[in-house]
Image (cartoon, rainbow, N blue to C red):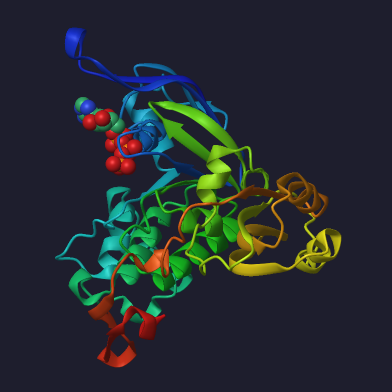
Length: 362
Ligand SMILES: Nc1ncnc2c1ncn2[C@@H]1O[C@H](COP(=O)(O)OP(=O)(O)OP(=O)(O)O)[C@@H](O)[C@H]1O
Ligand SMILES: [Mg+2]
């Protein structure tokens, strides 16, 4: 369990002082994965560094598993820090050490005997699925494998807290999914409390139990992932929804953007809305997924009536929130960016390169 109360971090003094964390309150219950999102410079990394006390807070309290860390003398603090593992974006492995030797580092600092260390490293390599990469140097590992080694190293001293600061940034979607899966598995097996800092909303939906948005040094919005995804009033919830491109509008219809706004949207809602309105409902685009057992998502519809109030009411009866969407379609596959051609970029398995126009690839 992590409890931050009125946490303030100010860098510098006098006229040049910058307050990066501003009387911030935040709590992560034991065994939960809390995602922290927010714009660049919001203070996310500073928050992580204050939790493991690599940065001393200017004021306020940091309580980890019932122990107030901010007032501890250096020796006790070093002990407390062992219970907090940290993983960074570039797993910051030592290039002259093998995967196994990198994982063994924290054990060496602690004076663990070589035999014990060897057994622990083997167990950790196995846990992160890299038993066959023990002797590989960082340059011989893929980005995802290096991150797994970083996670294993963070777990070497059996921490109860894991801080992940942009741990999946820069990894491709499949590798991200596998690293995220590993973190969730480790949380389940070891009852870890995890703070997962990221700017990738797709990753948040995969990993988080709760989400907090940090802005200007304060938590400005937070909630469980499901609460946020099923509330159209939540700005954070809306930003968590993928907004993909959609087909162009159809003649004689009005375009609507709808979001799942309840935990009980029926699976046949398109038929129900069609029957309710007695008019055509065209599906122009959609992104729907099950998150913690609840269907969430959004869709773009073409609806053959301009009676907006009736449409909104029919949608609401199915637990959906809708607004007329008069903007142009977002274009093909926003997730692949605005490229017309994808060349040279996609290295399929066994080193084969696939290229083509965006339409081919999509
Ligand atoms: N040691 C320091 N001295 C002075 N200012 C600092 C220091 N460390 C961070 N800052 C400032 O604190 C602010 C927040 O930085 P931080 O790294 O926590 O942001 P962040 O939310 O992690 O951003 P990003 O998403 O880009 O990683 C920035 O304006 C940064 O310049
Ligand atoms: Mg940062």
